[in-house]
Amino acid sequence: VCNALADNNLGEQSEELAFFCLNKLRIQARMSLDFKRRIAMVDGAIGTIIETLTLFSEASADVTLDGCGLVWHLCMSDGDRRAVVESGGAESVLNCCRVHMENGKVSTLAMWALKALSFDTVAKKIIRGKDGMSIIFEVMNKNVSLAKVQVEGCAVLELLSVD
Image (cartoon, rainbow, N blue to C red; front, side, top):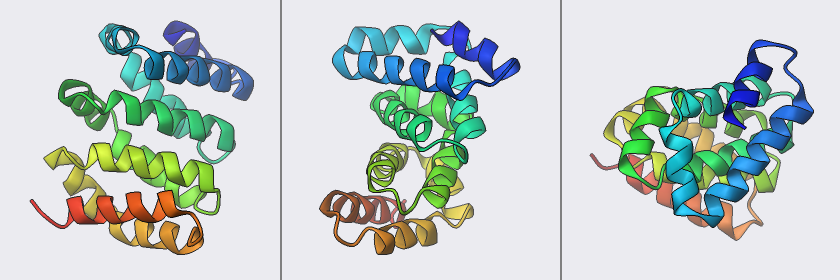
């Protein structure tokens, strides 16, 4: 699946294939810690996932939803979190927040991903440096009626406010 995703990023950049691959990876990562570890062990897989999220973030809320969900799952382990950060994951998720801030489902998963990323000191600096706190406030303002966005947004802001 990761190889198909990488080929798609280099070639035709099919939104449907990107959605299929990220959706399959997210579901498998959610269901199995072993599968999540196997994703992380594939050479270049995390970079390919972040690249896909970046390529399709403005074009597809569906790809963004699964991409942010997959980033969230991968960031649950310290080593994988660092690989996500080094691959540009913090910037990519922030961009997803900016582009899809009125989409409650994307905003929820993006906040979960940002919360997990905020346990990494480098990611915190990146998020702060990219005006992340303002973006998070804006997402929260656009999703006032969604408790999950409010709770997770507050948690991200709290994590970002301390070193």
